[in-house]
Length: 390
Image (tube, rainbow, N blue to C red):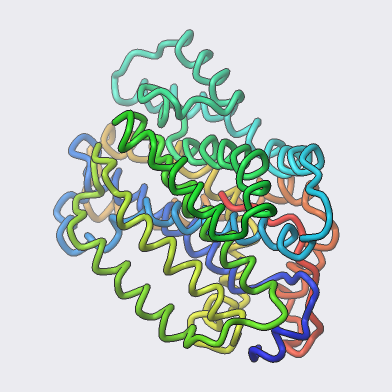
């Protein structure tokens, strides 16, 4: 899409490359957790000799950063395009709950089973009261506030709690600031709110609160692409430069980061690169990264990326424990893990059909089906409905 086309298109849109990026990020997180289990962690590393040549798989954390920017971009679009209308806070929270919770609640409860099985296989104590307490904290979406429970039961769910907390900041603080003082003011507020725990209280780094600023970067991108005309800047060159800076910022971080949470600088650079890519791709959807991400198989992965993100980690933990218990060889481990990738993706899609798709708006379902089914690229712009990032 040219800048002039962007100017005359006043409708919200569903962007296949955004959905595709969501899918790539979810699959990368899934592979990252297999890497941690099969290669990095000494207790389960049946493929430990593969460590050095597979270091490119260690950056799963930054897929979460991409998810947060995607969420800000998608949720910011309707706010940006309805600047003259009041923001219905109650409707916003109801729609977020309707979109998130039908899949999240059963995952939280069912995660207790593979969690207990993994503990048994690893000869660890199964503490039922702790599991029950963890389920309650997860359902209340506050489990990430305690270091002991942030990755207890189902590790990746820490980011779901954080994102819901960011939604509260978005509705209660960022939208009013945006409406009153402008888009850059809300970004400044998000930076302050996100970094107060780190720089003032020197605490809560495990919650990664500065990701609030990445959500705000998504809002900035949504505001810019919603304008009648894009600012006359070399967006492609800017996005490429931001991507290079982001890649360079990752160099000091090695070994999957372990318990180190001091990743705020690369988080910010990755967030900026993703937000700038969205602007560049809106200006011209034919740029190579956007075309690759809009490929049908990639978009298809994006449709059930939330389900894949929710369910994969407990299953990976069980398989890792089983392989250790069976004293599996490297060759057998490779075969098993390859099968796990296929099986978990299939299970995630089935889970999506039951627990996620029925709660997606009909307009978004039609848009997704059109892209996955191969709609013509010349088809008219489709409405962007209730996107959600994981």
